[in-house]
Length: 234
Image 1 (cartoon, rainbow, N blue to C red):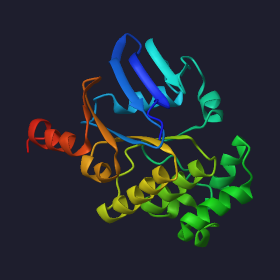
Image 2 (tube, rainbow, N blue to C red):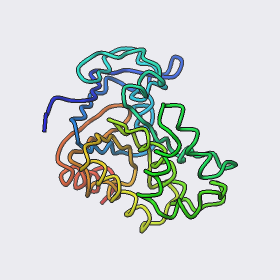
Image 3 (cartoon, rainbow, N blue to C red):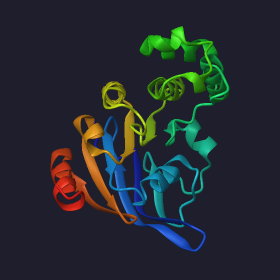
């Protein structure tokens, strides 16, 4: 496996108006890796993912994809380059059916038949629910739908924000098992997660983010120990 980063932030600063939120963030995502971005709420994790998906601009520093600087690229341009994002809160359309939610992803050039094949093969329950309104499904099923919509576009990089939010521990475990399978299939994944124990079993490395800075990067087990002893009060 190549160790050259597929996606990289180098000294990235970003903010909202006059308030700087990211203070020189450095993150590297190698091909086929799962990098867990950990830390408490308000640390800058979501803004970091927004920068990586092209939703939020970089004020200084470099955002690189495949070694090329892509500062200023739009979300649509980055999507065509293989970056797919699942935002916090799942991002499904509650008043549309499962099938209609999948159809929305055809804007990337993939057919509905292909999207449905990917979704129903990986998550048979979605096949049973294809005519059901997404908003009437459980949180876990909605997360499966959001993942399916992303996977149908054959992403190179998957950006995941707080997958565990609002889900039962058993469902969280199932969802992250699937994320681990995706990484094994070659998708590179950057996942922001407040609940470290949900993602660390599948992570290849972890970065601890506090107050807009990555303060530590390393082995997931070491970061977990540091999180529990130093930052989460044991």
